[in-house]
Length: 360
Image (cartoon, rainbow, N blue to C red; front, side, top):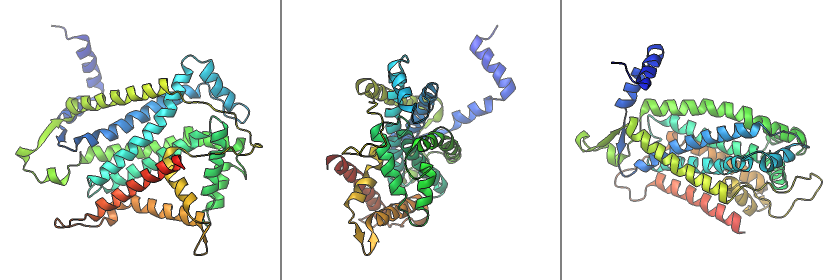
């Protein structure tokens, strides 16, 4: 009896690429089911949004023309002349924000469930690097439409980077390609956005996924201590994978809703000679830092307030990166959990300062 066409195709591929062991491995791989299982999907959703960014970004590259005289007009052409160009540009812009949001959610869920502990220290480190790179994606892509808001926000952002002692001026010069934000800056940000950052991101993403696959899903302490017969497990393939795909479809619908009913505006073309408009703000994921710097006095103990603020955020970021290596060990009898308190204060600070930044 002749096999169905799909089975014949698989047999043909299996004969050449030995796919059966991979399928067997995926079937044997299991995922624990408990009250915190929902957080397992945040990493998969982040990966899905990255793939959407990759796909829509490639489509936009087909028409985008980097350059001080052409960038704005090319985006306007995409939005007004290219079939569904406005939709793909809106999906790319909204997707960038959701991408960063879900990485933040994934990071804090990992923190509060203690998934950074041994042997997953490097999984945490690579995940934090991916968050920083995702924010760099947003910062570099923000300037590409060459509109008024993006121009002056980039000017403010690179000025902040330039206040770092010793290396600040060099960093600002590398970012801008000169003393001011010009067409050279746009060209550099274009190269960062489509080449340099994606290359680095792909390396760390590959490492992160490899670590997760090798070490499996983390079990919270309340579940890890249970006897095997009381643990509920499901196969990764196809059970968990289908649930993951269902979460992707929900996020895709949210993304399409935002893109269709709240399309991303292009704004006014940048004019380097014009004064900065009022209300210049960065993207929401930089707002907590931006607003904090505004609250710091001009001078603190003889140090410029802005310098002190940038240094404080740099030290805090380094400390967060190294959480698995300095974690405060807690006793079961401790009512106040120091690490949980640190995480709560960090999350509350980010949320409160972000909200204040939009209200003030």
